[in-house]
Amino acid sequence: MKKILSVMFIAVFLFGASHQTSVSAGAASVDPAISGSVVGGYRILPVQKTEEKIHLTVYRGDYLKFKFSGAVGNPVLSIPGLSVEKELSDNLDNAPYFKMKKTGTFPFSLGQVSGDITVIEYRQPNYRKVSAKEAAGLIKNIQPLILDVRTSWEYKKGHLKKSVLIPVQELQSRYKEIAEYKNQDILIYCATGNRSTVASKILIDKGFKRIFNMRYGIYEWGRDKYPVISGS
Image 1: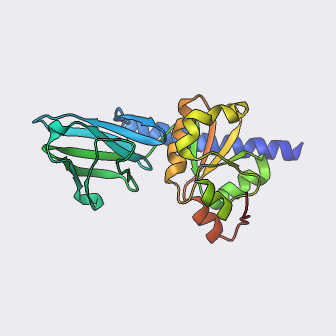
Image 2 (image 1 turned 135 degrees about the vertical axis):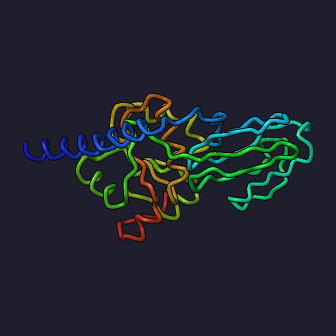
Image 3 (image 1 turned 180 degrees about the vertical axis):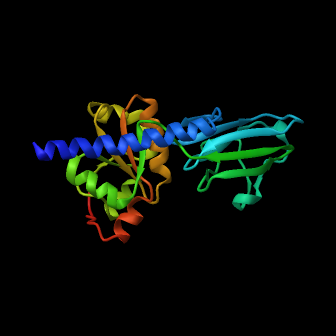
C-alpha cells in the first residue's frame, strides 16, 4: 500500500507541477500559433514571395525545412543569430534541415523574403521535461515505457535498458505500435533533448496523455553514470 501511494504521489506531483508551470506561463503569454506542420519529423515552413516581413514561430527542438518556389529569388537562407548561411534546395527530400537549439527571436532572410523566427519552449499540461536523475526515479518507481527516438546506429552504440526504438522521422507513421500506452506513462529520450521534444509533440498530437521528456538526453544520463547497454 505504501509503495502504491508513493507511486501515485510521484506521478501526481510531477504532472501537477507541469500543469501549474504551463498555466502560469500561459497567463503571462499564450503561445502563438505555431508555423508550418511536422512531416516525417521535420517542421516544414512554407515561404512565399512577399514585400512584407514574415513572422514565423516554432518550438525549440524543431528541425526546420523551408518549402518555397523560385519566386523568392536566390534561395540562400541566412539566420545570423543562429550562425546559418546556406543555399537551399526546392526539393524537400534533398533540402538541408536546421535544428532549433535555443529560444529567442532571430531575423532571417530567404532570397528576397525576410522576417523573423521566434523559437519558444513546448508546453502542455500532459508534458513534463525531466533531468536524468528524475528519469531514473520514474523508471524505478512507475516503470514507464521508455522510447528512444534516435537512429538505429545510435541505439546500437548505447541505449537505456528495455527501451523501444522508433526514430523520430518514423514516429508519425509508426506511433500505433505503442498505442496501448496512450493513457500510460512514456519517457522519451534522444541524444541531447531536441528530437525527444519533437517526438513528445507528435505523440501528444496523436492523443497520448502522459509524456516525460528527458531534457538533456542520453548525454546527461551517461554523464551522471546511469547504466547504458549496447547492441540491439
